Amino acid sequence: MKHDHDHDCGCGITHEHVDLARRRVLAGAAAGVAALTGGAATAATDEARAYYADPETPGLPQIDMEIDPGRTALVVTDPQIDFLSEDGVTWGVVGESVTEQGTVDNIERLFAAAKAAGMPVFISPHYYYPHDHKWQFEGTLEKTMHSIGMFDRLGPLNLDNFEGSGADWMPQYKTYIEDGETIVCSPHKIYGPAQNDLNLQLRKRGIDKVILAGMSANLCTQAHLYELLELGYEVAVVRDATAGAKVPEGDGYLAAIINFRMVANGVWWTDDAVKRIAAAG
Figure 1 (cartoon, rainbow, N blue to C red):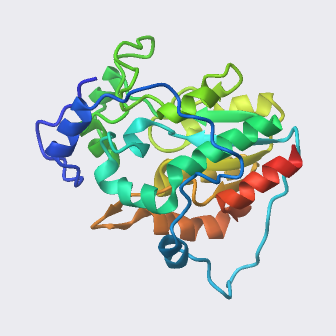
Figure 2 (cartoon, helix red, strand yellow):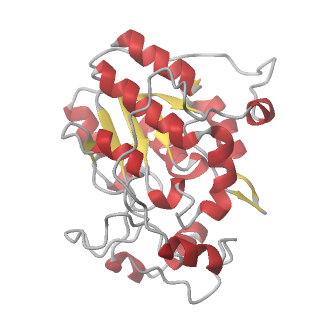
């Protein structure tokens, strides 16, 4: 899939990186299913856990969310190559955070745990079609995403060149997403789910509690958190199953973690989330 980089978008993603992403072809189908214990998975590094640790004496009341079978689902935002692979167009700004948190493997562990427990799984993907590139105004990151061809597809009914493109799922997730049971929602277009059918799909399944993971922490994941809370859902965010960009403007992951602590109904580590999902199953 062709990405347009004829000018510098100012996002810190180099032309060399994009050229590399174009040349590389992701080989193979889905990777082996991760064990629920995550023994071989890449967890958040000790340094990252320490740096982003919760305050020893929180200033706000500590609450939590209980998993209720039949009412709780796993929702994953943007589990796609452009965000999570070194071949993706954003790796130059999100790669450090993804690596620190062990995000790729942690998302897979959540998929595996949810499937084993019979918990419904919903994907809220991000796609851009040619008509989306004709918008008359954009925000800062919208302009960046459009200029680097992020999540580009040839059209809503066209899957030509989709396989292995930046808009495609990470290969190791395909065994979970393409099992005939996972609900893949219509694409969101900016950050939150206001313009897709995630809320409808959740409500039609009787879901009112969400375990939220995916990319990226301070953008789509956070926007989904806020929208779902406004719609009356309980939401627990899995803190090391997301990541954020690190740019001169700041650390997106740190910004998100601060907000997660303030508004979510729970902020869990993947280890904890996997155990809770298994126990509820």
